[in-house]
Image (tube, rainbow, N blue to C red; front, side, top):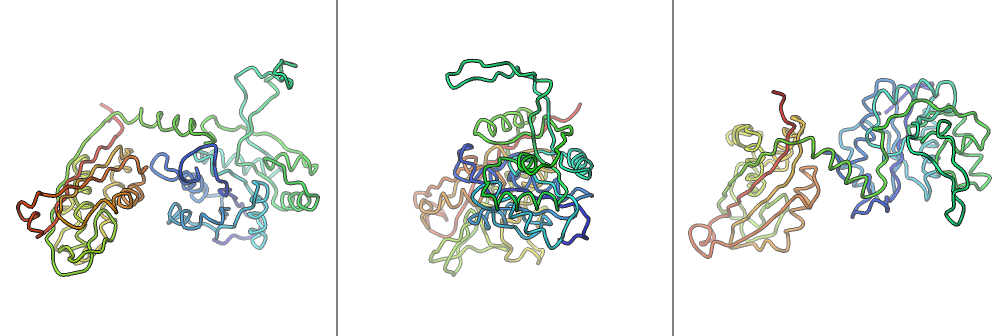
Amino acid sequence: MNAMPGGVAAIVVAAGRGVRAGGAIPKQYRVVRGAPVVRHALSVFTSHPQIALVQPVIHRDDAAAFATATAGLKLCAAAVGGATRQASVRAGLEALETEHPRIVLVHDAARPFASPALISRAITAGAAGAAVPGVGLTDTIKEVDADGRVARTLDRSRLRAVQTPQAFLYDELLAAHRRAFAAGRNDFTDDAALAEWAGMAVTVFAGEAGNVKLTTEEDFARIAADDWAALADVRTGTGYDVHSFVDGDHVWLGGVRIPHTRSLSGHSDADAPLHALVDAVLGALAEGDIGAHFPPGDPQWRGASSDKFLAFAVDRVRRRGGRIAHLDITIVCEAPRIGPYRDAMRARIAEIAGTDIDRVAVKATTNEKLGFIGRREGIAAMATATIRLPVAAR
């Protein structure tokens, strides 16, 4: 990305580990509303007409996860964050120095639902100096002492819960960060506090109640519950596929390459489990089958990787405002053994479908040496897909 000096840049900080949110991966890579948190956080900036540059800041160990989560977004090369949020923001600011924007917005990747209108307000406020979005408090706020006793009741009319994106004149914020670094100050939890320390006047503009920060497992659970409640049209589809063995040294099953004494015959990569799953998803949508969308006689699909077919079917669900609720596959074969590859298949299918691995089941059974499968002439797969769509207006 390139911008003329004097434009607006956004720094999105995604370098944390998110330990309070639990889970096996950093919270910014967990999927909510059909996409990773960090993708939501970045895409609202990349699509905003006033934003010229979007500078992500990531953990040094997350390059591969970040690339997968943000494929197709127009971003600056990711900067590597530091040990604290403050250090990560400074890394983003330094990365933008050659572009020299006039205004910079600093946003936390853990806030994936900022609106374009909020960003526009931030840009307007930032043009006049340091500004942060804030929302009024509805609860009564008490100050307590070390023993838990109430010391005083605060006037909530004068209090604001501060959010991001926070907006600043770029030169002033960069200078403040460099000054704090030189002074050994690395304890600021947001850029407004650092700006105040540096003597900058900080104003507050209207934030948004929906601009929530995902911090704990309860936050993720609350978002998921709200989303699922709105998707009350529950549908189920089934799929079946079979491929015969030919000479070869591997098979593709569930998006995973498995060494074997034979290969499977097919126009594409002959991944029977994925083909069955595509039919199941399309069946739940009542949108035909895999052959209707990817005709086997079309040369462009010769040898194609079946993840493209599944990604297409899942995208059809998303375009209708829906989500994948559960995917279930049964593979029927005498060989190869499926058990050692089961979790790899689940992980790959979850990745393609943009869902959690606990919403993907892979099972296997033999055909008790009966029929063409029992004679080791081929492999069959059955699949069930459960999806949830918004209830259509009547």
